[in-house]
Amino acid sequence: MKFSKFSKYLQKLEETPKRLEMTSILTDLITELSPEETDKAIYLASGYLEAPFLGIKFNLADKMVIRIIEQTFSTSKEPNLKSKIQSLYKKSGDLGSVVYELKKLDKNSKDLSVTEVYAKLFELTQIEGTGSQEQKAAKASAIIKELEPLSAKYVTRIVLGTMRLGFTELTIIAALAQFLSLEYQRSAGYSRKKTLAKEIEAKYNIYPDIGFVAKKIKEKGISGIHSIDMETGVPVLSQKCQRVSGMEEIPERIKHMWAEFKFDGTRVQLHFDKGKVSKKTKGPQKDLFGAEKVGFMLKTFTRNLEETTHQYPEIIEAAKKQIKAQSVILDGEGIGFNRETGRFLPFQETMQRKRKYDIAETAKTIPFKYFVFDILYLNGKSLIEKPLKERRKLLTEVISPGAVIIVDEYLETDEFEELEDYFQKAKSLGLEGIVVKTPEKAYEAGARTYSWVKYKTADRDLLSDSVDCVVLGYYYGKGARSEFGIGGFLAGIYDPKKEVFKTISKIGTGLTEETLVKLKQMCDKLKINEKPANVEMNKVFKPSVFVDPKLVVEIGADEISVSPSHTAGYALRFPRLLKFRADRKATQATTLDEIKEMHKNQKGKRLFK
Image (cartoon, rainbow, N blue to C red; front, side, top):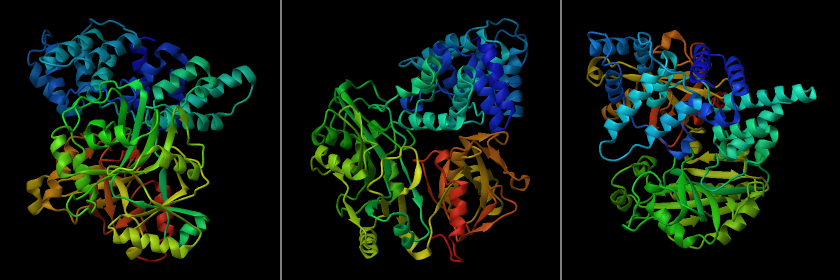
């Protein structure tokens, strides 16, 4: 497929906010693509070059791209090129649109194929070392020069990471199911779109590389996804916990209870494989002690599928000594602790380990423990279909005792009183609470069901939980806050059925000066000129500055009330910001269904701490 034709599909996607229309457009695109270019086109439409967990980035900021645009059009007849670029950018807030307007005056372009453009962009990401920025600028400029206006617009956005077409991998999965369904109808005269979508999603949950999944389907149809299996080096989507309104609800949901401590840390999925040579990972190539990294594959990932291997050198060192297996995938929670007292550190202190530099020094000041609670893969075979009891037995056989990697303790009981005592123990240790699981159940990758439920220590006092919200924009400050340029922000929750974010609260109280400064810095990195297509918002809540919905914050409040103004249909009463959740993606925020359930379970009591 020619890239100009591909760009017209992208334009159609950009022009519609309707998920069903997006699905149909993507289905048509997938139908026209060849198997060889399917993965590349799906990646590019999503705004990246390979599965996000591989960490391939262009590392080109706005200022550099403006320089690239100046370089690209330096021979044009535009007399005041710099001021023209700035004027167009101020008007649209999108450098892709700037390139489009300037390219319309340029008649010299080639109609390259999707594969050719992809190869050129991939080469751009591989430029490193001394003088790399200048080389990247020259390479990017050459690519833009070759393309027609619409193609150049979208390539610029891809390079900047600002595609924002309003769909997620779930929309692509729906389109793949629709494509297969149409193929079935042509060959067998019937459709099973819904079951196909579930099958594809199940495979994506254990192999979250949507380009790879799409290519397999184009190559072999439904049999293509049957060949997709879990493998080391490819993170599995984490199973998540459901909420309960009170501890008494737990035995109603789970008769035979398996309780574990809930640590207020960061999810860590560890991949270990002696049969694979470790490719170069992000960050330093030496461990905490200055030794070269291990020769076989050893990686860690967050629940966001971000590779964090270089951030946890002590886990890597411990894994070499404590894991007794050829290959394994572990699921657990990493948490910092005070070396003198042994007490666990608050979440915000633990998250200081999330950094690119000074890792060894930070590891000394914020040492880590990795509490492993599940094993998903062992010696070449997936274990997720096995019940928790069997998986835990295998886990204890695979991990040797040690000070860093610890197989988490648990309580197995049918007695509510024992569960109460275990909860009190968690509270006395300063832990966040407990997670209760169904020991007979399989590991449900990517799911949030009542086979796992959580209950926090904060719930005991005020019978509730906090809400993970997405920042949708901020408001300029008034009075004393005017010096910060921010006085409050608009928060939303996620509706996965419609794949949109809906407003639930306007938050302006309880924000310290330090928090305001940090919040504005984070928001300004994500600011955009217009409301994104995947945000539903009443105009009365229009913020001073729109923000790309990526920043997740944890919010506490007194209760949830019905709201005719907020698009979620609910509002948070007396909301306040508790913490920033750098470990969560926007689509992992609290969902609309969860808010409905929490509102129903209030029972007239105050909700949040």
